[in-house]
Length: 151
Image (tube, rainbow, N blue to C red):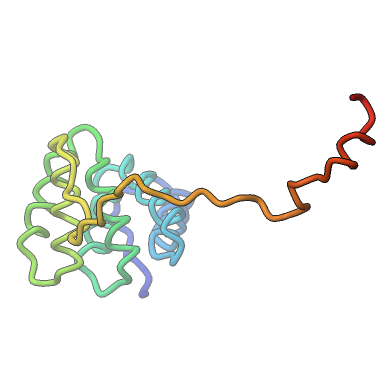
């Protein structure tokens, strides 16, 4: 991953460093870390949009693409419309991972639930076997019953 060129909108070196840390976390193999970074980038206006768009359409791991789609659908304010446009373009992309991530993000933005797994599970019949607990013998002899205390 090559170093990102500052856009000129950053106010100081701390902002540039913070953006580079979030960008590195976005490309993490851990999806939780990547999604958290994408959510934080969704609050960062143009810089966040640029980084998320780069991760979505670039040659990066699947986790980064899914996290970027999550960040784009979580964009706030005036950037929400631009993020929606990026997702619509991604839904027409030839790469299947990008296309599926964008389609799911668009469905969730519209408030619709995405389709479940392609292969439906077998319905449960409601029948199951009840087994006894193995252990000591349940039968007691007559003499053992008579000798038992408390009777």
